[in-house]
Length: 192
Image (tube, rainbow, N blue to C red; front, top):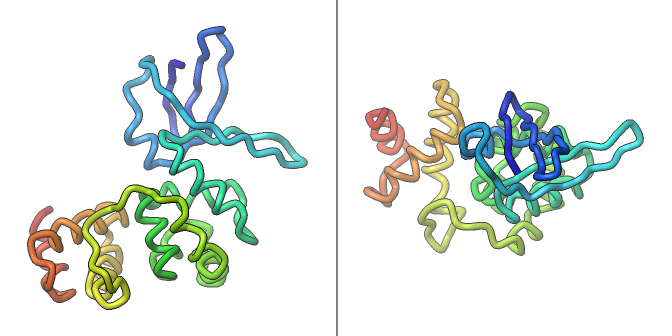
């Protein structure tokens, strides 16, 4: 398939000449090859009473997480796409698993109540997806993630996009696993 990217959707042309409009998360758009090049997308076809929409992903894990998100009450294609556009699939899976409501609520269209409903409904089921780990994690996620979660939240509050803040904090944790949230914030900002 060849693609032509634009906004949150791509037009995919098949070898037979048929062109499909496929909605894709921002995190996927950022990893797509240049327009006109070949790409393989995993498609989810969502049927609703007002129409049908195709959603595309680069990995089966991303698509499976999207489908899992759709199974939560109050989550439709638009909200699931927003969540996967806000953060990479492994980070979203970890936020669901750890029931990190503040991170989940960063996505447009997701408030505290919806984040809580999703976390309760999906936290036990997301581990079965076996997404690639995002970065090093200690055995006790609640205790070890606390300074990192605080640092990510602070960086986001300072205006850094969530995916960049999370990646910066993870890089600092690789170098200094026992760093406090203040140290994580300072070192993450110094990397910019």
